[in-house]
Length: 415
Image (cartoon, rainbow, N blue to C red; front, side, top):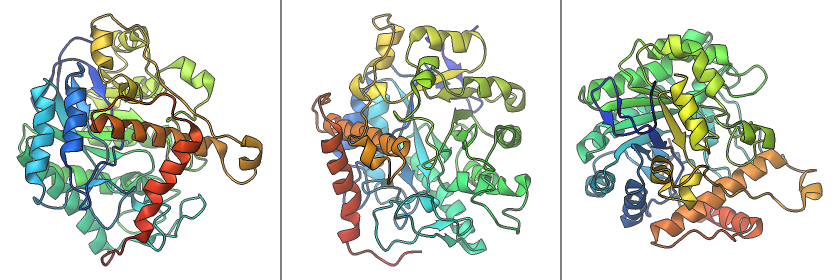
């Protein structure tokens, strides 16, 4: 029986001091060159003092030509090594371990970046207003992306991070290769479940070949994408079984994508009350995962639910995200018994009757809540406290301003 305060040993030898993970949230705190600066150091210094056994960074992109949103930090080479080193040190100084989450948006690149053409396994556009039809990656393009993940991982190890997490969830590029809805290829990269998972397996192998054995390698994987004809739990279990044959240290379970969000404030009240949205799935893949520890992120709010999930053996670690925005010491509060249930702040779009005629309100609420939390992270990064009174209109304006400004910036040649 495991408890929240127990350490967790990963196969690579990395030891987490406890079982509470600060899960990834996109910070959008990159400078004009998409490199980290003192703001990210300030933010992570606060989280590092919050009692978490592990901090997972938000999206770090592997290609400046393809961003999920303006402000994404990008690692293509060693140009920002001093800043990356300061980032990792801020976590270690507070007693936490840190994994850098590596990602490529694929077709889920910034929807407001007018004129940008994303890339994807196949030319299947995102089913959202303004989404451009992506260009299908060539074999050479696929090789380039795989190498980018490996290069970024090697730089992270040099900078002092304890490991990396490959983002294979929430509809980003790796997920697009896994799903039969977005991967229509008939070559060696698609056409069957085994070939659709090849991209992820090749990225895992390339990263592992470029880093030391003691550098942790985690994978964030969807339990499903919750779309008819898409990536199912059976598909996901097969991916877990394949990952169990590789040198993977941790599988973090999540779910959904931009078209069918499963978290972020848009979920039904019954789902929120249940807590731990993906715990049933985690229980079902225990055998497939073998010796690889499983972390579950999404919905955990009470110490009782976290302890029960660990005690039952359904998972080895619990991830929390949004509660850490308004309570940077959320883990310490739980571990020390000061807090029984963590709080989150959810907002909903106004004028729902009108907006409901032209857009998906569930998706809109999801985007608004993501943007609200991003706004709060920016306040924390400037040494300020969260603004709990920030409403949906102000949040929407900030979201449009932040994501739309990239369309006004001259861009270099896109790949």
